[in-house]
Image 1: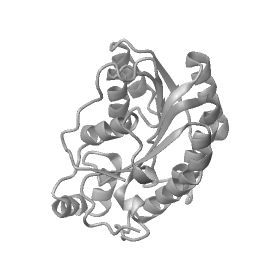
Image 2 (image 1 turned 90 degrees about the vertical axis):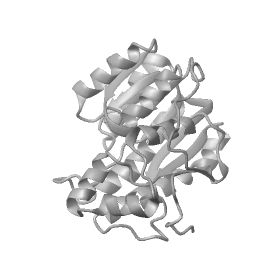
Image 3 (image 1 turned 120 degrees about the vertical axis):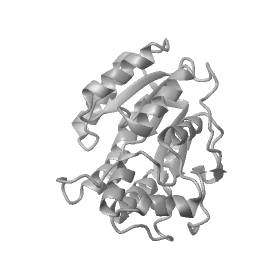
Image 4 (image 1 turned 45 degrees about the horizontal axis):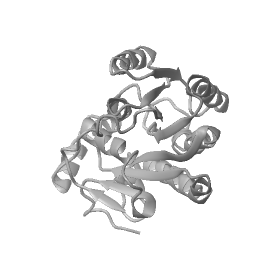
Length: 261
């Protein structure tokens, strides 16, 4: 397990991912978009995945192409198996394979969704995306799953009631993915979980603050520091290249208020 407390993380070295292809789910904005940008700056060809933010995704794609890398922008509903398969069919046609898969997309606090939507997206869809990607992931490739301390430590440390259904579903997704580590290792595919505290400026933080005013400020005071979107994205990007940490877990920021298992 690696614990990172550096709030000034820098992008990966230029050229360190040249010739590699990376897909980041949910990358039209926020942590996913900044992660994709860092990977592109390191030379990786990028697959931007979005659900319904096509103009934003296309704009990011145009920006990343200016860095001299190839970019594929693909809309897909990760909770729909046919949509996921169609996305990876496009990736195979464009690049022939995949070297880095960042499982960043998550949710569950949106209004108007089905009661089990959090579990569908944060557990079932994560497994579906990984399994559909597997034929494209060769030896030496890397899968990174992005989560939060509130989800990663949910079995030992209670979280805000408003976030608990999301936290439980994300932990279920993490557990389901971890069960596949032995099979991934047999194929030469590496796996890393990146867990961070509440991230300033994310949709989740905004929704939590709306449901529980003062929640983010209280967590910031407890932790001493909360990462912003670009700082945390730099850690996610680094996890695609750094050596796999013990326990396949990279903890970002303060963990002193979370009880280990």
